[in-house]
Length: 449
Image 1 (tube, rainbow, N blue to C red):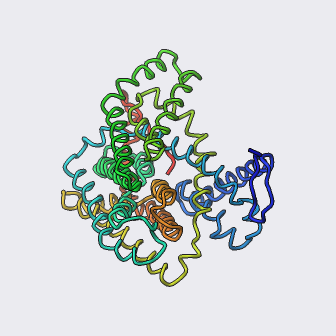
Image 2 (spheres, one colour; image 1 turned 60 degrees about the vertical axis):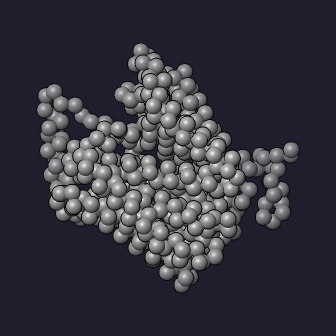
Image 3 (cartoon, rainbow, N blue to C red; image 1 turned 90 degrees about the vertical axis):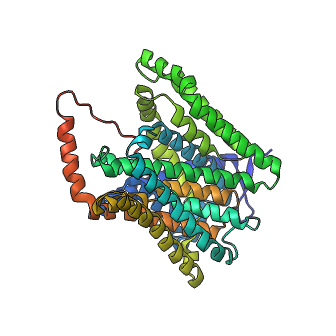
């Protein structure tokens, strides 16, 4: 092996040249994501992640490639995408591990009747919408992979429409002091159930793509066995890690090394059975010890993950996004249908379910606004779809646009329908926390979306 790669012009790039280019790419990626993220927070009142999602698109062919194609192709030649891909997979895997660390089982037990209704509605309506629109979408060549069946396409679209930006939802609820409110408990529990169901559906789709029954069985049985062991035995098997951290009073290098080895092994196991590394990271995170261990692990891993690794993922997604495709009449119509269907199915169904279970209209609208945001979760799921050939570049670009629009909607719409009440209840919550004997709550999950 010569350690060389070929440029689009046929010129050979050496390993040293690729290494130098990689560091230049990271400089540009971090600067663009921080700058656009700051602008989104400062001028649009959006979370940092929204700006970073947009920055990834800006660096791709949709804007930089359109305005300065030679510069864009020189900065991100095709041979460098494989390097960015590996960094992106590490980033989303670690991020989902951090999300799993903040996953609270208590969310499932709070307001169970209303939560179940909102969750079921938030899944059923998107899947019904997918059943209605997928046959029409499959009539347009190139949206789905050539070997994808109608059932696989429908399940994938249902998972995409039903997914919720759970970390963003948790962050908004915590920041406004609504963790113990009907809106907070309903949204967190319903969002957690919906996302778990969407990932399970995606796992089924990935398992059936292989065609060979033995390969599909390996994926289903392997993922099922891993999940069962982690859910049923994981907390008990991993508890010594928590006790070790408590004795040391900190996350020492040996503890961090063991944790990262467990993460790498889990990610490898899910990739090896034919699912995806993010499943391994997330499921491992849910089984890890809570308390000081989870809090300190997040402190050590989250800054590196969200500042360096996730921007690589946003950029990799942006390099595969070509919004110029959406400007054609046929694709513009498809984009409009998917966007309207996604918002109506998710926000509308969650609002209606909350109303039918006795919530007032303001609370129900707030739940619908939060549940409708897709955020980073949508980007992860459609990247997996593109990687495995479920969808083509055109539908990928359309779904990126849907993810950005629904995420942009979440904060202003929530502020419009629930903001004043949120601030009032947040003030009361802070006052109660300051009373003697009260404890300040920690954020329930990674504060990324």
